Image 1 (tube, rainbow, N blue to C red):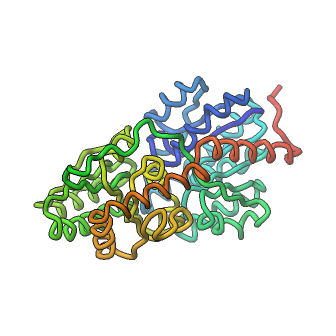
Image 2 (spheres, helix red, strand yellow; image 1 turned 90 degrees about the vertical axis):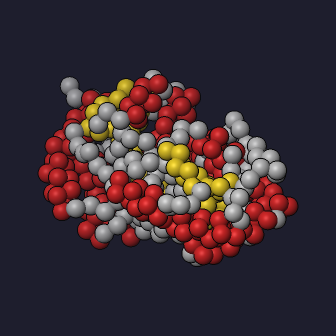
Image 3 (cartoon, one colour; image 1 turned 120 degrees about the horizontal axis):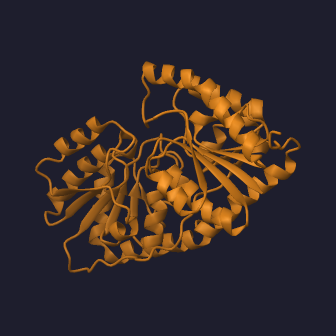
Length: 372
């Protein structure tokens, strides 16, 4: 089995971590893979650590968030050249399946031929963008993997219900789990790329209310404005002025960061699907209070494995309740960890994705062959 894997970013994000998690499982099955990414970000080194060849895609750099007219013009101008490059890669590598880990690559990959699988990690903003990607799905008769039902349903009208599957993300057991001592001052955190969809401004608003009711509580924001507008980060820090909030920057040790928290707040907006940090908190034994945005209600059973709240005011109230009730807090954490063990392990996710790729290859009757 040969997989041509394409990602739209070479910087690290949740979607890119999914691809990195998939590579060891591809090798374990004895499959071969060629990975294409734009730029020279940290993804390149991580892919090579997995002993797979990388190719620099002739596109980007792309950024998350709202796009300008110049971004759209650049994307359209790059697409024909990128399509030729992907076609040439497919002719040279002769993949059984092309795995596309990002919507910006779909139009270019649609003309490469062969079996195509698109991994959808979020809802796409803008009708125009969705229409172009939908056209690419129809043209290529691609299969779609949605990270949750909320995301998957948005692609049914383009790909057809029989070609859209839901595979929830998974992750391995953390090396460290909850380590906080009850005698320590409470610590509440927010972890993720600093961007509007992650809701750090709402976190600051909730922290202000919590700090007024519980003055010894301390707060930490892990993250940086990677792939996003740094102006938002400045706005968040301005709003946090005078509050006991530490901006700890980006961390590669999310389990370690979670082990030092009593509570994780996830104030994501509707553009988020299934934030990876929620599953990381489940596995680490750190209780979660989140907004019921996107696919989050598919992950959290309100009142059992976490708390779902509608705004920053409710988030502060729910957080204070858990911080003051250690028994309830521990029960929520234990229930969430059990759900992770049953539904969201890395091995379960890897097997589900690779089984779908293998099935899609078997169903395809037009595998590309090496050019003579």
